[in-house]
Image (cartoon, rainbow, N blue to C red; front, side, top):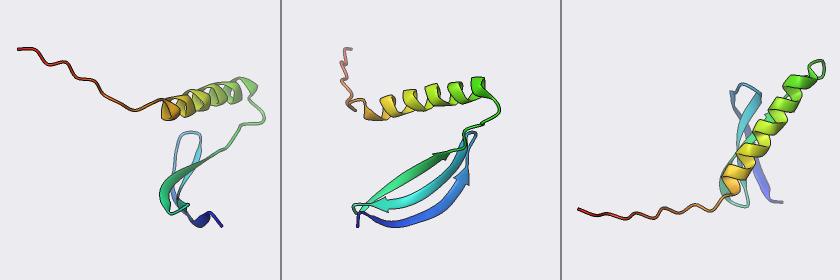
Length: 68
């Protein structure tokens, strides 16, 4: 079983955050609370979530070019 823990951590602007362990790695789990009576806000939340996931999937590297 990949999940070994799942504990409440905090509440964010769009839902609750949990700290967990997945395949022996510490992870943060975000559970979105989609507003069912506000379709515009729900769409905005979805767009922001997709942007966040894309940012997290982006390659992480830093190239420095130092000149004096």
